Length: 560
Image (cartoon, rainbow, N blue to C red):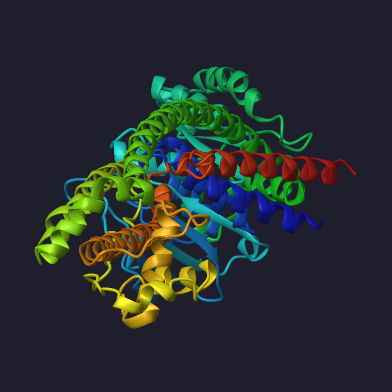
């Protein structure tokens, strides 16, 4: 894998981690992650000029560039990070947060967009300020950043802190007259060392205003501090320089190279060129920033992972408890349902129907009240059982959030017709066998068109099938007319009740399967594993593993 591809993988992983950690927008870690990604994507060697207001940062840069490119004054001026890049002509580009841009020749436009207002505030609509300048040092892939002065407002301090992480080399401008204030020492530790930034060159300005003895004291104090920031600088190159910025700028504007030499500017320029030449292919410069950041990312990711694990454990416990409740509820509901179903099946079991309703059917037929009786007795009883069964089904569907199977519809047989035997039927009772009777009487159940000799045979056969009270081995006496009538009603009742039992059974059996499904709990074994937290945990783990693997590849490539 090529080094550029490894860098791109690292950037991609870091950007994904920014999103998955769900950091606050003003989180320093989030800002640093975004800055380090920008830093990796920047192919030029970036030098940031850094220091408090009125320390001469912009004056020093103008001296290096040989012209008054950047705004300078006795009051704090720079209100934005100004990127100075190579261009054939001096030109300024202002980019706004709404996506629009302004380009103009020269740098006069900086007064409108890059200088602080009367209340010492920056413009909040500007996203970046770029100045293009024709200078041989910039043409070699180098750019400067003129940063706003620190120790004035918190918003500018935050801007400077973010930009420092994206620079390959920091030039810290110091005022020899008030050397290393407490704020400056804190910035060295918190903004630089703690973030893996160790490539710092210190430039002492205004030292020409001090007595010779005071100048020696300043250098003595600074050497100890500067030593902490030269580990990644080329051997034999100092990181502490004296440059009298304003005299240096004046000498450059006049073209007086001798005077420029006495200001320390030429020595400083030479050191910058040597550092850039040595650093351009130095992997450690950028990698040290990533290492420091990775430690913070790993700690935050570990805490986030532990937090997610606790949440998943809680969700798992809740899910398990919920499943146990569902199972208990399912058991109770099914027990109640099966009991109701058992009672219903027991009720429509043909022998029980026959025992319970045979006489009532005969009576209803004789009194011509059968339809009313069927509605008030059979249909009413079916409705009661169905209502009881449906109550259990409703409970199951509601509790387990299952679709309802719908209402059971049972169409009862039609009112039976009673046909009486003719007088000569006594000689014809044995014309049909049991098999013929079964095939005609029971399936016909809804309409009993049983007339003449056929009807007598069917009725006789039904009586044999459902009651078996007639002894086939004995000769059946010819019934009297009254007895024949009673037997006709009785046979009609038996066939009707057999049809009721059969119709309900054929209708209810498939419905039985549907309602059992409706009262079955949907217990998923992977609800937690499908949760957003579970996905987030595994994605975070994968991103961190990929990041570590790419870091190892990068280290290995730069060892070879």
